[in-house]
Length: 264
Image (cartoon, rainbow, N blue to C red; front, side, top):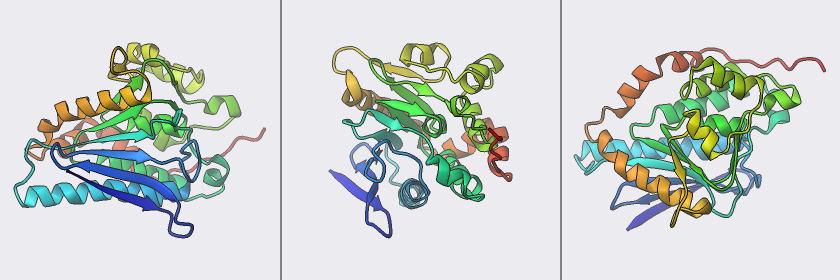
C-alpha cells in the first residue's frame, strides 16, 4: 500500500513536488515534478510551497509513528526528479534570487536546514544533471546515488561570475572539507561524472550494471540504499547525531546570508 500527496503553487495550482510513501517499507520518494520549470530550478515557490512543506510532512509523519510506537524497521527518504527528466535540478532562478535580499536567508537556507533536520536517512537520486543550487540540494542529503551513464554534478557559478553564498558553501561542506576538492568545485567549476564524483567522495554509489541503467535504475538503486539505511533511524537518534557531524555548516546556515554580485 502507498500514500501520495502533491504540493502545488498556491496561485497557479502548478505541481511542484509529489511525495509518495510506501507504507510497507516506510520509504518516502520526493519527486521534483518539473512543471513550474522543466529543469527544476529552485524558485521561491518551489522551495516555500513545494520542497519545504514536503520535508515538514515527512517530519510530521515520523513524529506520529514515534508517538504510536509504529516506527517498525525505520524509515528513509529519497529525492529524485521524474525518471524522464534529464536534470535533477539546474540550480537557482538566479535573477529572482539575487534581486530578493531575503531569498538566501528565508528560502534557500531554510530548505537546506529542513533536509538536515529530517529524523531519517536521506538519499539524493541523481538520474540527471545537478548544477549549482541543484548540486547543493544533493549535498544536504545524507547519501547520493549518481547515474553511471548520464549527468554531471557541477557548481558552475564561476562561469557566469556569480559568488557562492555562505549557505551554499556550507551545504557543500557537509560533503567535503578537502581544500583541493573545494577548489575543483568552487574555483574550477569542474563537471563531475559519476566515476569522478565517487573518486572525490561526493557520491556514495554509482548506478550501473544490469537493472540499474538510466534514471529508472538510479532511482531503483537509491530506494534499495534507503531501505538498507532505514533501520538506523529506529531509535530516533539520526537527527541529533547528524547535527553533531554538521555543527559548523549548520552554524553558518543559521547566520545572516546575503549575496553581492560583482560588477562586470
